[in-house]
Image: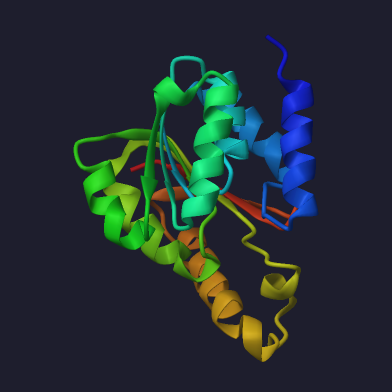
Length: 199
């Protein structure tokens, strides 16, 4: 079944309501990675309204998605969207703070792909929490890592964004300087990091 019109409607609705959904350039990169690695299990930090999760499951037909969302209304909308796309039976949806829930979500699970798109200042923390549950040769896809061009600029960020920008700068430094990962930073969308776990 072709769901392309439904995906367009959901994306447009989200943008009208200022709900963050993945930008087209980043989406293309994410879905190309999903098509390439054919994951059996994906962890998503930041469900929002289920747009990217549904897109990934539409490509990876044998995949299970574990996804966590902080806001109850967004999670409810996501569950509705997962039903619309016929993937709800392959989704384990969790409501709450990812830092508190991740230990129980990932316990006993091994992931081919982790998609991090939650609060930007927590990327390093999320990454380190899940690293032991990513299979060798698996990937982590992080969105918005250049955050409106501020991360790479080297300039002092505005006060209200300082925590996010400094945290993302430290995160990029960490993943770039670790021989356990092969990291690619792309300036597409709002900046993406594609990390292959090689050790």
